[in-house]
Image 1 (cartoon, rainbow, N blue to C red):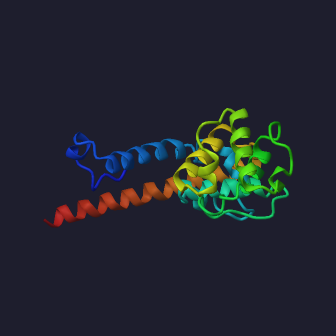
Image 2: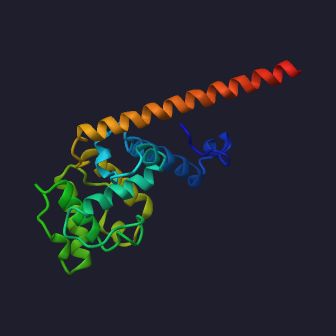
Image 3: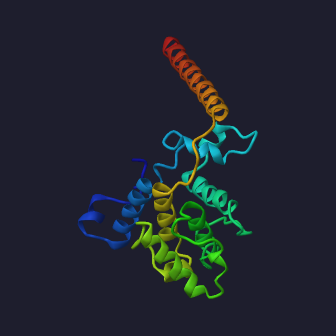
Length: 206
C-alpha cells in the first residue's frame, strides 16, 4: 500500500502500543482519503491547470499539495481574498472553510458567510453546513480553531471526494492531457527497455 512501517513490528501490534497503532491507522486513513486526488480518477482536475502547465508535472505533485491547490482554486471563485498553504494555522480562523463550502455547495452555504465576525460562530457554521452536506461528524469547531492538521486534512479530502465542484475538462484540455500522458508512457517504456538492455550487457560480461 506504500505505507511507512520501518519502525513498526508485529510485537508492537500484539502489545497494542497506542502511538504505533494510531500511526499506522492514520496512514491507512490518509491513503484512502487522498487516493482519488488523481487526474486519472477525476479528469476534471485539469480545470485547475494554468494555461501552459504540464499535466504530467501536475500529476507528479503529492496528493496533499493538490488538495491545497484544490482549496485555493475554489477560494479564487469567491470574494475571499486569501489563500492557504497548510491545514494548520491557515484554516484555524474557519474563513477559508466557509469560502470553500460556499464555492462547492452554494445550495447549502450563503455567499459571504466567511465575513461573520465571531471566530467560534464561524467554526460552528462550518460543522453545521458540513452536516447538511452529508459530511458531518468528521471535525469539531475546536479542531478547526486549534489547527489540527490531520483532522483538517482528512475533512478537506472528504469534501473533495463528495463535492469536487469542478467542471469536466474541455476538448482541447483533454487532447493536450492525453498527448502528454502518451508521451510519458512512451518515455517510461523506452527507459525500461534501456534498463533491460543494460542488465543483459552486464550478464554477458560475466
